[in-house]
Image (cartoon, rainbow, N blue to C red; front, side, top):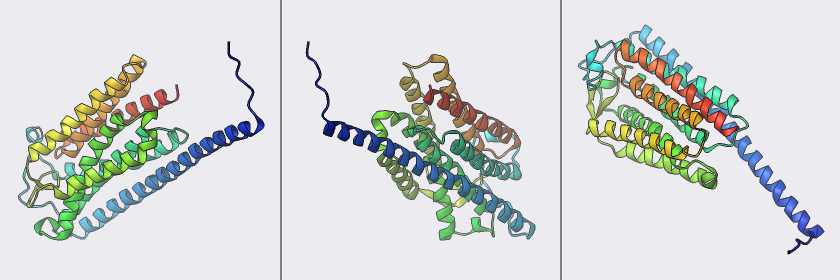
Length: 298
């Protein structure tokens, strides 16, 4: 039987040094991440309140009105009567949703080291970009082919790609083995979303009933997002196969309900879809985050 020799004083000092360095690195990472979450929380409040005030003022002054000749694309939405203010209310639902959930994430996951939460922040950022839809009715921006219209339209595409890709990356690159590459993966997420949003074909002459400019190959765009959501869902099931069945199913179901609510709310141009999305999105988010928090602390 081989006995382990006692560590020399110098070796003990080196071991303690690296342990302290590792703990300090984790603390600094958490502290930096928490500062980012706090900034995003405050920023989302500022953007949401500012957008609401600006929209109310321009509407009161008569500088904001429903665009003419809007196209209805969604077959599901066409089952119900169109209401312009249902679309506007759906946008403001995101304005309320993002700060509330960002605050919950900041205070609820303050001491949690998790890649999933970092990716979820980009999901919230994508939801916040839905507010650019409020720009199209302002001062008849939708009538023009100006740079502002193009930027707003492409920002919305980036946001809608960011939401689904961030959750896909969360399922694909979560876990301790990917922790050292978190910054690289987040950078890759942003680059892919911005590149696709920049070069995706758009039709600035068309305005849909959900207050966005037309997209080339609209069915392909929507189908790609749906496939990514399904891929994320099945990846989560695979990742959780060795964990507690009930807890993992709650997280998976919460994710699916959250994404279903998100898709419905982004396409809501009537009060039925508005009510459905406003119920499913926060309920699914609460279930997903609660299950995630439980898994990370057990």
